Image (cartoon, rainbow, N blue to C red):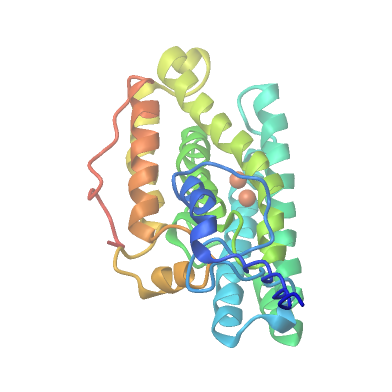
Length: 285
Ligand SMILES: [Fe+2]
Ligand SMILES: [Fe+2]
């Protein structure tokens, strides 16, 4: 008689540490292949939430809040860009302006689709978002007009770049529909911020032969950089910590802001222009 063979042990369920390399790669600003599991926060290793119905209440509230702000910025920037669709200095710039407006409309729609999944409550927010006029938006950077072409350059170089950080913070987040919207949005935003840098660079280099002047580009940097840094939110924000714990965002506000400053500083220096100090003219610290 042989002793009964014990049944093979069930394969171990994945646990948080096995996702550590992917999570670390994302936190460091890299990209990874899409995965089904939550990569960070207190539910790391569990399957991502795939529908609005299965999302826990605290997370539901935060997703709605984040998507309302996201959609509001997209719709606001359409209003800001609109006057420049037929005033940009050269033909290619007008075409890119038109593309940016179309992209921002699509991003607004994308955020609203996520809100719509949250039923009547989400729909009420969408209805409200569509009534917002210039000057009524949530973040200061989106209530300022583009008075000169240098404003368009500095806005897309600085403010769209913050937008990219906000989107990258959602990459591979714990809510599947949001995570899956990121790659396309990110590739579109990349055009916007490269365009902004090219406007400032051409202005600084060619002056009135292109448009404006180096001084005008510098003044626009001083106007928009502080508003862009404010967009990351308060350094000690509890909401940003909650967003990380829920697996929705991967950086705290301050971590994202520091990465952003490190990225933008050499770009502006290479144009022969200067960033003001990070605490210059700030409203949200
Ligand atoms: Fe956008
Ligand atoms: Fe954009």
